[in-house]
Image 1 (cartoon, helix red, strand yellow):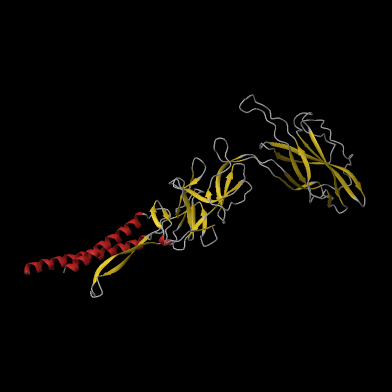
Image 2 (cartoon, rainbow, N blue to C red; image 1 turned 120 degrees about the horizontal axis):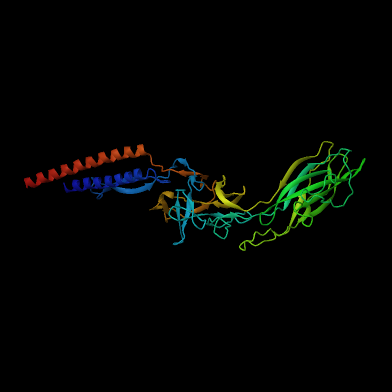
Length: 438
């Protein structure tokens, strides 16, 4: 009789634990990246001679790592994993790594990517040239200005690619070779009637300032059966004064009788020098002189056909300083910073941790897991490799709790609890009757 009481009590205790597991699952229905738990029951036997069971017990509580739904968000630093991997986050105070499926991240005051608890997302940072490192570390947005604000530093123009068609019409005026253009009107550059065609481009100096640069083309020779030659006059500072005016000649752009350019082969260097900036009287921003720069000017692919002059293609590199405005993530998990100057820059490649036995990870709360002996050591992989899965941005993984399944489990546990309660009451009544007999 006593045995039946303990058997019923074991059923009550086990179902209470099971209801707690279900309650925890339901409570975390809206928790980002939450993985539901399931309790496994096991029976209890007293001895080999005792063939009647001694009840039940909570055998183990396992984590269900089924994929949760992916929900779109407006935060570009919200990431969702589709696969088996985990984000790696570091506690910089304890110098310890934890693992999570909750992909809600932000920038802290030091422009380091963190989760809501201040743990730092780990990845493979990119250097200034865009090369991805091989060692995991915090993801910090660099460079930053004196106020700690992430910026993209200005990049001086170093290359200009220009494809044009210089008219092969026999009516084109031929000018003396090698002579500089006369800037008769400093507000307009060379006077009309001193060149055949022109093109304008914008060049950036080392401080990100823009400068207007014009290229004037002069036809210098035309020989039947041989071809033609042209001079390209690169002019800058033409809008200031005669003293500021600068000019460099790229001589002998040569075309054969078919109109194809035969020389120069490759770019020609144009050495640009700039004047000291105009000073507005503010001693905090004294006038500076941007560094001189060489621009590789390449006319490869240009032609001289009978059709009128035209610009076929023009590409000039360089850009001004820009402030960080947003982020984007590509299919390989490489995070780019988007800047106000219209450029983007590699920040880092996100990393994922992969475990042989993820169900053996220790749950420590705050959507975090810790590595255990039974989970095995982690393997670091990049998105799309090593079975870690893929990462999408502007998204989070929702809880994988199935509410209908939890309700069914809850009803079954409730009925089991009620049944064990009846069994316990019956045992107690029978025990009372036995006492009365004695």
